[in-house]
Structure formats: C-alpha cells, structure tokens
Image (cartoon, rainbow, N blue to C red; front, side, top):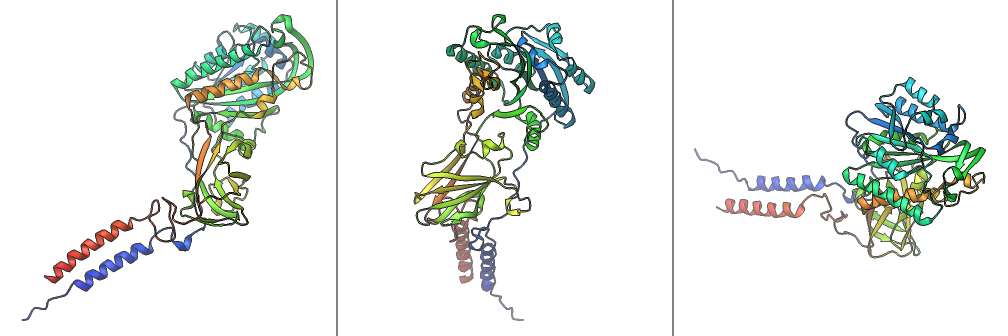
Length: 480
C-alpha cells in the first residue's frame, strides 16, 4: 500500500496567520475608540484603621476658658456635646476618653459612657475647672500639645482651647514667633516618631466673663470684664490618618451642619498623593486626540483655534482632606506659566456613567501651545486666608466687632504646625498630575492610532521577531 505524505506547510502558515489576526483585532485602545471617554472604576478606598479607635478629648483648663462656660446652653457647650455625640453615634470612635489639661493631664473618665459624656458637659463650669487640680495658668501651647499628643500614640487626640498665645510679656512679634517655633519643634519631634494628620476646626460662641488682654501682658492685671460678646475657639485633632478618616468623611459629607457655631476648617498631613484622573473631551477649544486609556493623561495632535487651546481633566478629589472652597479655588493650584485654570466644577450628575469615580472637572487653557509640553497641575498646601484674617497682635479692645472674631497670635500657631509638616516632607503639595500635550502624534510612552507600542500595549516587535524565527524553522524543515 502506498503511503501518502501529507504536506503540513499550509496548515502551519494558516496557524500563524490566525495567531496574528487574533491578537491584532484584540488590541485595546485601537483607533476606532480614540477619544471616547470610558467609565472608570472608582479609586480604591483607603485602608481602614485596624483595631479599636480611641478618641482622647481634652479641655483646656486655663482661666481664659471660663467665659465660654457661663450658662447652661452656650454654643461652646452645645458644640462640644455634639462632637462627643457624633463620635459615639456615627461609628467614628470605639471608645472616648475625657480629661482636662494645663500643667498636666487630669483624666475625667476613660471609656466614657453616654451618661458620663452628658455629665462631663453638664459640669463644665468655672468651679469644675478650679476643683480638678490641673492648674489654671497661662496656655503655653507647645507644652500643652506635647502632653496631649505624646500621651497615647495610637489614639486620636482632640484639644479644645481658645488657643491664645500667652507670652506674658506684651505683644512683641519676636516673642510670638518664638512660640510658633516652639510648636514647630514639638510637632516635628512627634512626626519623626510616627505619621499623623492634623485638623483644625474653628468655632465661635457667646462669651461672658474675664478676657485677659495679651497685648498688655496677659495675667490678672490685664483682665477686662465683658458680657454679650462672641469669641472664637478651636478644636485641634491629631491622629493617624486611617483613624481620623471616618470623622473627616462624616464632616465633609455633612458640611459640619451638626454644629451651631462652626466657622472654618484647615488640614495638614503628608502630601504627594495622586488622585484618579482622566482626560475628557467636554468644553474643548481647538482639537486634539486622547491617547488611550484616557487615564494616561496624554493629548496628541493638539491644534489651537485662533491661538486658543483648552482641554478638560476629570479628577477624583473626594479623598482629599480639604474643604470644597479650597479645592475649587484656582489660586491654590500651580501650573506652567503659559497655562491657567479656567474653572473647577463639581460633577453633580450621578447618572453620568463616564464620570463615575471622578468628582470634579478642571478646564485648563493656554494661548501659547507648545509643540511638546508636560503640563503639571499641583494643588499646593497653603494656610487658608481665614487663619490670617482671624489672627491679631492687638487684642486691647475685646468688645470691638473685628477683635471679637480674632485670636491673639493664632497665625503663629498655625504657621508652626505647617512648618513641622514641611520639616518632615519637603514635598508639601497635596497632589500633583502631569498631562502630556503634543501637537504631533505618537507622544513618547503613549498609545497612538498608528499601532505604536503605547504604555501597557502588546509587544508587537517581539511577536514579529518570534514569528519570523518560527516561520524560518518551518520552511527549513519543509524543504528537507
């Protein structure tokens, strides 16, 4: 019987042809999808705090606090009670420790129950501050902060105070600066041991009692009796970022509506985060193509219209520890000199699937489009303006309407905190993004519609080389 030899050559070449067609058609980001905005997955939620979360809440025991406590239902008492209630009812704190602080820390109750929290608020008055034995001296903020922050590294510490710098020797700006430097030294030392965030909440409340005029030296000799005025006070929170997160998210979502006397907020923490971001084609001026995926932040074939070029970036700012006013103020951002932010708009359309996972849209414009440029967008960590308008070195007339809104030396305190974070992390930007903009196509490292090897693309050169080698081997075998 004659054996028939089968020629495998066409079969093998058909196999390689199918192989190339399969991978060629499966390429993501092909020219047919260019510039289409796809829904992005929401950025992953930050890791939750491990273990029970303790909030240690301390009341400044200084004599200057008495005026906030005159009466059963002052805004001060109501808002301190609201804080403690929110910690308990919103699942923010597993345990609450209460105490006073001045010359030393004096515990009132550890693992306080709801009944003990109510009793703490009910007994907040001049007599209880005198009887607790913690001292009634001037508030040396650096020493007080040292005691509070160093007491339990794993807890979130809250210090409630008027935060008046008591320098004891008049209003010399050099003495105020020294106090700010002392705060920087204390916090820098603690930040070298561990990482933690700081949140400052500003409130106001009715004040009836003695006000100690620090610009006249402070102490009993400077006391002025006042009634029916309002004075600012503050809650400062210090704690590991994961343990503060629930509180920050709750107040950001509720816009601090649970408080009656809340006025403003300021945050400090390690910078350098990178929020989720992508390019979109809305509100563009001129024309361009978006290299896919759009999260690469690469613009190709950019063309200006009458000298004007504008593009939009969707960014998720919801995880950032800043309030809406700070996030949407273009003055808080840094860009190249030839670019500017036209607007920052919150995405208020929950039905827009393409914007799922992105909270804000930035419109960015230039009248000087370069051939190729990295356009950086950085949110700077700046001390808010309210800190400076609410600070004074002259508190001689506490009934003055302007001085009622100000705190002696407060800006020096906040600047000291800010410098401490700068000492730890030289990059104090809240976040930074880079957008590549080019007039031509095929920007280095980016996908393009001509089949280039964009970031994350298929290794076509390797496939061609391997295919050629295998084809050569098959051809030689068939020749034999």
